[in-house]
Length: 276
Image (cartoon, rainbow, N blue to C red; front, top):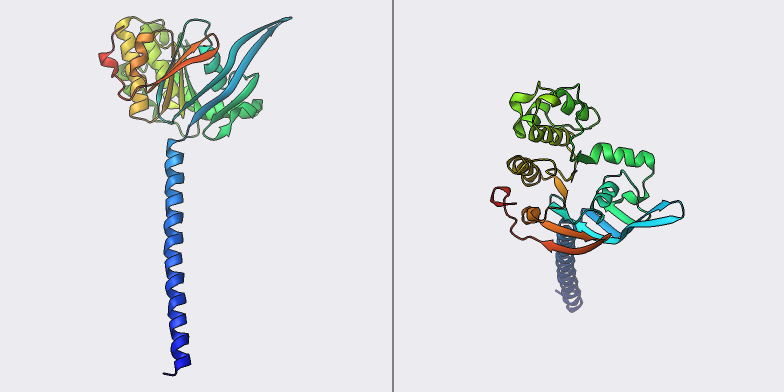
């Protein structure tokens, strides 16, 4: 082999080695970035309130219900929003549920800014993404339990099986009963079944045990706990009862229209162990 050919061969080999090393380095760096991005996405907020304010105007009088609320919630978390009456808890719930609008600030759900939605977009959001559980049940009185749950599934894209959902809240033998034939706890569990049957991403519960006795209240809380732990639904419970806070993954305390404290429970206590 001529001297010139040897030089050319060596240069060629050196170039290929350098190129191969660069490709390995680049792929490793790219994989690392993708991994970090995936990890960041998994840890990112599913729900986020940014400086949210709500002002009610009554004639010349302005009442500030929320005064710059900030918090975030991860997907699948069970969150307790606690505070005294008039603190702003229900206002937060109504805004997050698309039933009311913020005066200012931003609300993000699953990466979308719902605070910019128009009326039609909010209706779609409520229909497909939100399940509501109210303190006073709001069941249709002339429909059976099964018919009440079935009614909710009519506006859902991917509803759950009606009878299985009713059975999951312990009302398998009460499907054909009307609301007036149920106890308070059974009516509340029927309303939870109605909300769950829509297969919502978020379950919003406004004082779900407020009108119930101790034992019945714990049964209802157990159903909500299982919705989060077993179904992966993001469950948000509004309550003034601070004794319930240990069951939540996160506790957001609201006072005078502001977030007073946010506490993370690394080891939430099962409902069965809570006394109140």
